[in-house]
Length: 425
Image: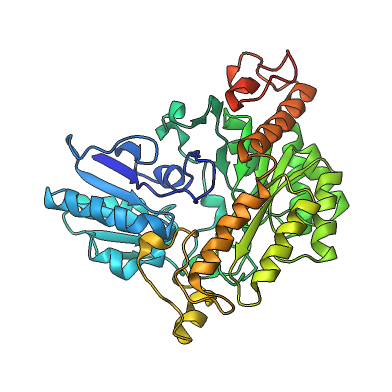
């Protein structure tokens, strides 16, 4: 069975330095395929897509709403050529009804232990229109290592620097954040993987630098403590979403290789100020994720927030505009109030205003979005701040003997900066 797995192209945020990480969903899915399926993976973000070649079936993995229209167009062309198409991934689940009109089959939910039957149906010519397992999560003990061998590693570099590999130690999330669809996708139950499987997979990844893509690590304090203790001997360097605001946990995270953390900054409170200071006190850098356009934000609030971000010395910041994705409380509220202005999914990239803000015009919110990027990076460009983060991880690697000295990817001139240490690179 010749199976082509495609990850459709999607746009980066306006104002953000463009780089591409190896996608996680496709490599996790590829690990669930039957042994007799010969898979070819194409990430359209880093390589061109050709519709030619002998293919028995196409799979389209969509993570983001901004990928769906491109995914549908790809599917339509393959189906015109007589090739069956199966869709899966987060965005497929959020847009299932629309996607069904472009698919031979739509798979919803977690794939472990379920693809044998799907491919048996495919071979027999009796694919079901929908395989719906959204309400039936798999036991986490059945989650094996991702199939990273499908990736073309040389495509995932930024100015010579190899990008992090993605990994998850848990699924689900007990939180129910306003703009997020995770509670719809996986329920509000935290589901950690067994530690032995986690450590086994981590140890088998040949990249020393990782991104732990769990929705949040701050879901169970004892689990975090046990996870970080198990990770310390591996000497990996990693970034992640929030870590528990606790000195013992943060200390263990630092020992386990925490490099930097994505932390939502939603106001100018002393709580946020202390939160960022505690990360920094443990040697963990912070990239603030800043959501603009919430109903309680005025224009002055956004400007004060920008001053605050600079004051607390965030290492990086990523600005997005509130986007009412399907199956979120944000969309429910805005739709009920008649404030959604567009359902053109190409605009749902978190850098367009597709709804009517409460305290300003859509155009003014877009101006403030650009103002936020320009103001935060006015005195030091994003690439220079990224380089300083790279210096931080190189220092950690050199301290524990995991730095690979032959990497020319660490030379500062690649970022337009002088090399700080002749040993680096």
